[in-house]
Image (tube, rainbow over all chains, first blue to last red; front, top):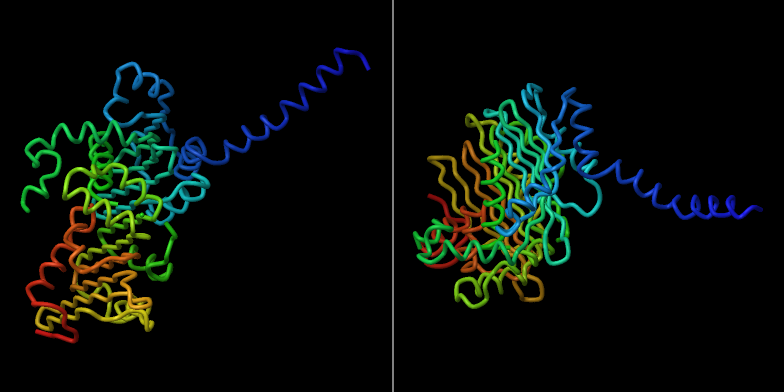
Length: 168
Length: 194
């Protein structure tokens, strides 16, 4: 076998698992959820690919979270069955995520789903929120240390960050 | 909308900051949960598993006395599950639903602590404690009103007096009221009605 052919074979052999993993990752996660929503409700989601970069540049991460991905559907007119939306997101988000909050208001046509996933010392959060004619999908990481520091700034008088405590 | 997301995230953070969650214990039969959610005008579901509670504890400052107490409490818990349903008009769920919910805790481990019935207004409050080998291993709270149904399940070592500490958790505000009502009743009683 020629050396060139051997290199190509080795390269294909090495790349195959990576390609398989990447292909698989498209079936679950942020992109899979966005695609599933687009398909189910026949809408187009505006993805904001630079949002993570912009968040880093503007330094919003220091406040306790870093935004990774954001997609917005404007003029969202679909009649959403919250149960169906929940099932769709549950299935497409993938393993490791746990739904922490589900809030639905049939009157306001509002639905909010919050999922979390431990990420080392931090926590990944995935939020799907629809209200009126807008639907947003957000993925971010919450950083407890930075959050704690920032929350403390507003706890000097014990009332700003947590009004409920002020009444105690 | 952006504002809502930000406030939601802050709300979750606040919840985590003040409070506490792991094994997905079914609070309600899945079909009943779906039926209630379909009939209710407002639905709030909070699921805090042990791992989430453990993470939440990291937010808490063990140096502050009140934080330290809540931190210690939530670190020992196995989960907090809240289901809250608000209905447009009375009669959108019947006594059979309440009975189905009760079935979830109708084993010998669950001991009734409080049962209050306000027949005039059609309100029922029930608190049950899970006792295993003489130790508190959980608490179940059911509040049924004509237009509202609230179910709270706390798994792990929790006492009645701890409810007040957890009331700041998002979605657990009702615990403070239950705790207060229990104190007002000067201790534990069962089968009461007014």
